[in-house]
Length: 356
Ligand SMILES: [Ca+2]
Image (cartoon, rainbow, N blue to C red):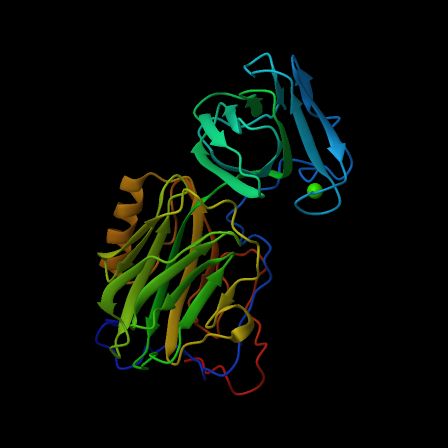
């Protein structure tokens, strides 16, 4: 019999956390909101042979002033660029999927600095290169059929350096957790789910907050509803890779919605349930269910999912155009319904987990 989780003094199937250790982790496999990297040597450590050089643009591998590793790509333009005066590469993408394309760039010499970065997923983007290494990010829906041709077209006779080029399929995602706490977190932040730098947590104001980060840029959409009220709260974050990370508490849209368009691919870290990565931030309370879903979703569909989850007070069993990649609801001893092999592991010692 399912209980009304909002009125239950303690979820029957809750797992009790002691708040002192990072105690449940899974391996990161299959809990990945980025697809596989499509550049075999985006850091230009071995060369630039797989890049095409046409017209007045040339490129080469250089071993000075790189962003990471021990080399980068230098692009020299002797005149203005266009579609037949550029550096480009052919990539096969899938129309209808979302992708994150990012690279680091720096002006080496010249004064114009302007560059046109063009491809069929990110469109036509004007870039003004800085004299310091800067990260450029494009999150887009691929509307056209493959192949596409990411290309740099410098505006004049400048020289720029490029490093750490990355292209990954990007999943939209939904994180659902049912968390209960009456702890005052004014002294710190309590995390309860950490998934590839996509984290649900209590803010220091005892509201729900989410962190989305790629290691360079982070956003923290934060709501206004107090959730350390001693009740079980259904907390949902949706991540639309073309736009926003949005929080919902008990079916209602929180004030906290922030754009992540400047954020590149998320970092692949082990999923942690019950504490932030490394155990530095934890909750005192209980968590009766956590689910992670990835797929290609519309905003309308995400809103519909939030309503359905709130109506039944638990995660959905299936998602059209999506895949449940992690699901822990702590029934019958705790197990992972996703079937991906990422089972619960107590890494924090004895007597921490109390189930049922
Ligand atoms: Ca490099």
